[in-house]
Length: 237
Image: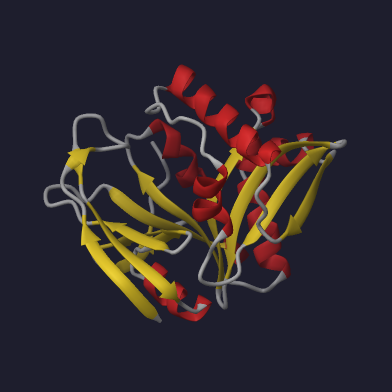
């Protein structure tokens, strides 16, 4: 691994819990193998492109890395329905690309989340920003594109690692929000991890009390990184 810089961001309003502040530690890497990243991920780090990050909040520990032991996963009724309702969707897996239709879909998704779910407003990424976030990576990343007929209605970026599949980010066309595409994307990840005999699917951070992340703890059983140990997470109440 070749590390270029580390940076502890100042405290700022939390993006998950409105009554909290958060603080993130970043590391920029020029080179990093998938094996090196997987070890960092096991201790709570994530990445967008060449930027690694993890929460280092002085007064809060609500951000919990979450993973699914895929061999033990049992879908609930709504998850089985989401899988059944989307059998007409075609998944294409390839290398990350940058195009205007991808940028437009990302912007459309974030505009909807801002208008209807209260997310902070983000202007549309330009080509360089999109490339830095999703297409330029220190090790190979998969781009998953979901098609309904010839129309791309969802895009996900995932790390295919030695012992796991890790979901980096997923966005979709809000016109198709009734299809539970976020759930379908996770179920597709579980299916692919099983096909490849990978023991875990990582979903990033789960924050109890954050509505946008609550779905992550609906896939059972799941494990969370609590004080340095991976332990079973309780079912949501």
